Length: 499
Image (cartoon, helix red, strand yellow):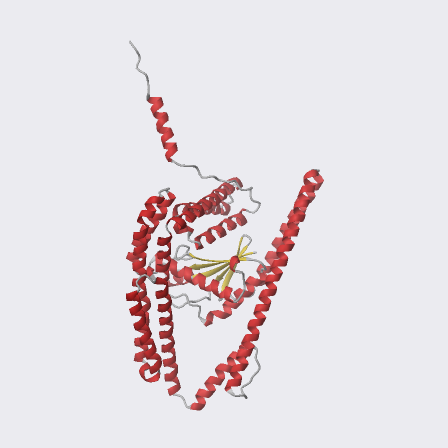
C-alpha cells in the first residue's frame, strides 16, 4: 500500500513566505554610537522631531511619526530610570530611523496629494478649526489619504484627493464668511453703537463699502481663496481701527483743547524717552514728531548694523570651525599612526577637559540668563545641555495669537537670553489647556509659537534657520486641567535654547 505524500510542510512554507512578503521591507536602523551623554542625544532627537512637526510630518506621515515619538519617549523613560545604556542607544537609533522614514513618506505625500495639503492649510489659516465636528471629519478623511500613502497605496490617495480638497475649500470659505466677515460686521456694529456715524462718518462709510466689495468678491470668485484671505484680513484690521478711532474721538470730545495738547505732548515725549531722544517739548509738535522719527530711524540702522556685524562674526566662527575640523582631522590621521597608550590617554584627557570646559561655560551662561528673569516672568531649568525658559508672564488675548505691548519687556529679556548663547538653536513651543476642541487648541498653540518666532525674527535676534516654532495644544500638560490654577499653568510658551 502506497503512503500518501505529506504536503503540509510545503504548504506551511508557502504561507510563511507569503506572510513575509506581505510585511514589506524591514525598517533599516542605523545604530548610533553609544552616547556618552544620553540626555543630550535624546534632546537632539527631540529637536529633530520638533522640526519635523513644524513641517507637518506628523500629519503627512502619522504612523511613522508616532513611532518615532514612542521610541523617543521610551529612551527618555530609560534615561530617567538610569536604564542600560545599550537599550537607550537602541531606542534612539530606532527613533532616528522612524523619523527618517516619516520624512520620506511626508515628501511622497507632498508630491502625491498637493491640492489636499494646500486646501487644508488655507482652511486652518482661515480659522476653520472652530467648526469642530465638520473639521474633525475632514481631518479624518485627510489622514486616511496620508495613511494610504504610508501603506504604499498612492493611487487610492490620489483618487480621493479632490474630494478632500473640495471639502477643505468649502470649509475655508465658510470660515471666511462666518468668522472673519462676522467679526467685521460685529466690529462695525459696535462702532456704530459708539457713534461712529457722527464721530468718523467718512471712515465708517469706507468700511461699509469695503465689506460690501468683499462679500461681492467672495460670491463671484469662490476659488480665489488667497485673495479672499488677504481682503478679509484687511477688512477686519480697518474695522478695528475705526472702532479705536471712534473711541479716541469720543474721549477727545470730553476734553478741552489744552488737555488734548498735553495728552499728545505726553504721548510723543514718552516715545522720545524710550528711544533715548532729547526732550523737545519746547518745540512745535512737527519738530517733536521729526525728533522721534529720526531717533527711531537711527535705532533701526544701529540694530541692522549690529545684526550685520553679528552675521559676519557667525561667518568668521564658521570658518574657524572649519579650520578646527580640518586640524582635528589631521590630528586624527596622525594619531592613527601612533597607537601608544600614552597618546590615547592624552587624547582622552583632552576630550574630557574640553567637555568639562563646555559644561562649565554652559553653566555660567545658564546662571547669567537665569538671573535676567524674575520668578513671576519666567521659570528656567536645565534639560541636558539645553536651557528651557518657561514664560510665565507671557499673556495673549483669549483665543488670539497677537502679541500685546505688555509682553515686550519680557520678550526683550528673551532676546538678550538668546544672544547670550551665541550661535544657539532655539525652539519656541506653544501649549494650551484642554478647554475647547483639541484641534482648535493645537492650531492656536502653533499660531502663538509662530507669533513669538516672528517677533524674534523681526528684531533680528536669530537667523531663520536657527529657530523653530511648534504647537502642542493640550498634549503636554504640567498640571491637571481640572482646576483654574492648573489650566493657567498649562497655557504657556516655552523657549528651548540649545548652545
